[in-house]
Length: 273
Image (cartoon, rainbow, N blue to C red; front, side, top):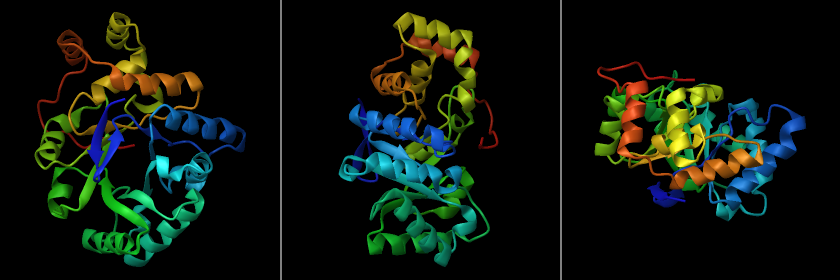
């Protein structure tokens, strides 16, 4: 497993996402087991949000990390409509209860909403002072949003990034790297893994004896300062995700992927899901 620094802590470049977890009681045991297996394999960064299954994913995470909280770097996110001074504090308390912990390592604004950034940041900083969160960051922010925020205390920007959605490479990713602001990539396999059947990803995978999903994860994390947070429930997929951190793509691989998924030549609207 490869590691990088996030919010002052060494974390794996491939963590675990939880979008769509917690939506069915029949899937709960498998979801908890998958997260625990991921922790065992070194994917100790877990990302969740109050939005996911309206708190259901946080409850799944809470069950998975029970008794091993100190092994995990925990990220959660607040809804924009809860991002007022009072709303942030109340939302964080609810998340802490569902997660069964006294602190969240990294607490993000899920996307921009009606409340001024200054108000949300003030609420985040109060939570830091109270020890309820360690650091804070943002999600779905483009360059102009980050420039307006203009706050060195922001620890990360979480955005969509995968071979089929690489618009951030034109300006957002270079800007973030210049500012030493880590990027956390959600949907690194595209929504529902849609791009994994692409023949070029399959060809690259065959060269290395791996899967297209592992190629996509290795591609996403090839740049310094980028973390991927794929979701997996089956034991095989969890293991393969962890192993992808050690896959090094060649210049030929990268060239082939560029041919299939052209790098952006102009500014693009930030992709969001």
